[in-house]
Image (cartoon, rainbow, N blue to C red; front, top):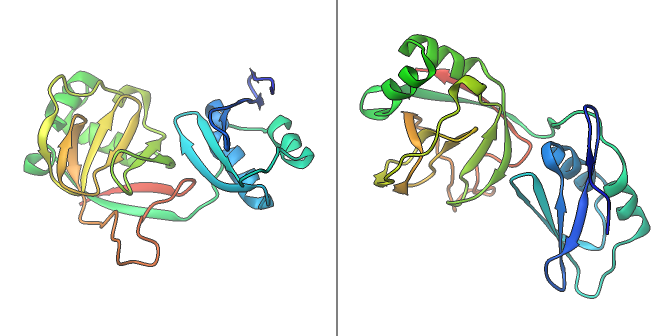
Length: 214
């Protein structure tokens, strides 16, 4: 088993087997950095890499073992907490009103005017930490701490596709209509997931996002 320590400039992960082929790696804030390092070296024994909140799941080829080279990458200290490895996307958002019914409450909780809240949300640089919940749903890191907010006590039965929302320390975008418990602050017309596209998900782990107010 690997060793996991955290400091101001580097991190060593811990890993453990979760199935015959699955290796869960606890990466902390350096998840994207480790993901970039693993993808760049294209290890033959890795069949798939699945990102989650502060961890990676390495799915190994059947019968494969952890090679010395892979072990070295997992044990190597990485500087910084994020890696900009993907595309930059500008997402145009209509904030407030029917598109963002929770915006007034979120601004009030943050002690800001509506305009100041929107400016704070659009001024931040976000990184796609991982995808989940719905196909193509991005969990975006980079939300200013003043904008962090708990999820709704009672989830909505229907959230419109394209809704931009706050859940804890993340911003997310709902790719499709459906139930949801995050705080809705706006909506985009960008199509987050289209199975007919060569790459169905618009945003991928490591991509960067900047929101633009309509």
